[in-house]
Length: 296
Image 1 (cartoon, rainbow, N blue to C red):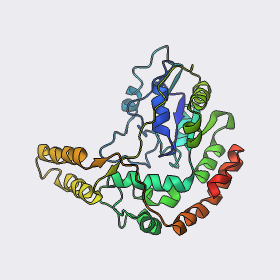
Image 2: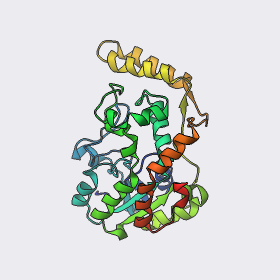
Image 3: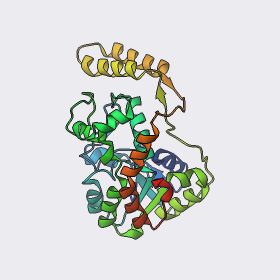
């Protein structure tokens, strides 16, 4: 079964929550795993994630599709970032529907940095310091050796969602694109849910509107980085049961649901907002919506 809708991004913008809503809808099929990233060979998943690298493996994700599923899709959040994914999708499914979740880019930077810290994909706890190294880290320098995507640590480019959206609109007819803002998902979830389901061709249902993938944090990023390094360099040298035991202890003891956000100075926060104004203005033009509050 060929998918007929794709949630293509952006990361840390509510895609996991939206996928959870859709997965509860009888007329809608959502893959497990949520993010196969089959159409984005330029994006490599971290080792702990599952990525489909061949057609047979990808097609098998849809083996459980039945006649009740009117909308069949997946939610790979880096398709929007990828330079090849959208064209590849269109080659297989020219009439596919594309759903894009967005948020204020400067907030996206902070959330993405926290996500990378949690998984030790970034080893610089201070966001401002990490931001200053954007260009350097694209080359792979000053990065953890187990991060498969050094380009994702260039937060300026990774969160340039206006430019990424512009590329999508140049490739896909406007009537096949639906933009969802994270703030709307929070403020009017039922309305957003119904809009998405009807757009992709499904039928809305009574579902649980709770959020998913709420930011978690490490009690100690340093300890987690040490454990990640042990797993990376110990593979093939240390018995797997020991590596797995250390990993499980770290996950159970070194994780917190604290909502404490990364600290930023007012000056740096203003710098981030100003930097992304051109990106926000591109989004405003493309979706025809005033986003002045994203520029303040």
